[in-house]
Length: 337
Ligand SMILES: [Zn+2]
Image (tube, rainbow, N blue to C red; front, top):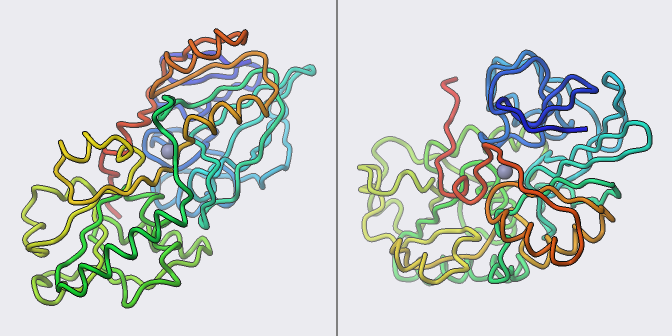
């Protein structure tokens, strides 16, 4: 039903691509991260709750939407979107033709996230899964306890008049943190300029977030000494950092599960908060799909494929241009508008 081509994952029976990395005629989009939603295609189809953010990221694109669970026919294929729990509007794509069912997961997670509808397991014959954190060392604590750690860190820094500078992914992670902190924030959370547009798009999409304030030109030092500041990792080592002298720095990412990564990158704190499934969730999800064939892409795909093959599943790895773990560290470009 799906083949990997130089332009992306292609469904010939429906003449469309899923998250293509080259411009195509028709692109079905699992979610708006830049490694999954690239500009230049003629037409885009995404799950309805993700449209506002996708249009923000790709202002020139012709975007059509489909509600979660609704089915349409494209060529010979019946297509539906189902929640993936990754970021706002993220979807798994279910394809059915002549009784055969495939599901393309995109990126997904099973942990609770106030900005995303919970992941819905979908039965299928072939499941295409991500493998960003597909190693047994990657297990996540409940998000509520990670949020408590962030709040405590901020409170202690605040008492010491030291800014709390939390690096996180611009699209998804930042807004998840803002949604979680809605009940906890003592004052508006300050945003690096690169975070402001997409955060507004989340509010437009109806997601309730903590109050925020974009850091204005010239704001620095004392004015931010009690603030929690969210910034993209790309701001590190730039002159922008002079606005928050002496800040306590932290990074919110699944990558922080590995202590060596935090030390090597010299963050004061690491908060293990990921928008991808951890190892037990990947295995549990694959089992819930009932799939007899699992195609694995990006991240630790070889490790996961080998593990599943040893348990008797038919598996293969798919070469895609999705970034997975690298995507967590890469800056998210803002559209020029
Ligand atoms: Zn993603």
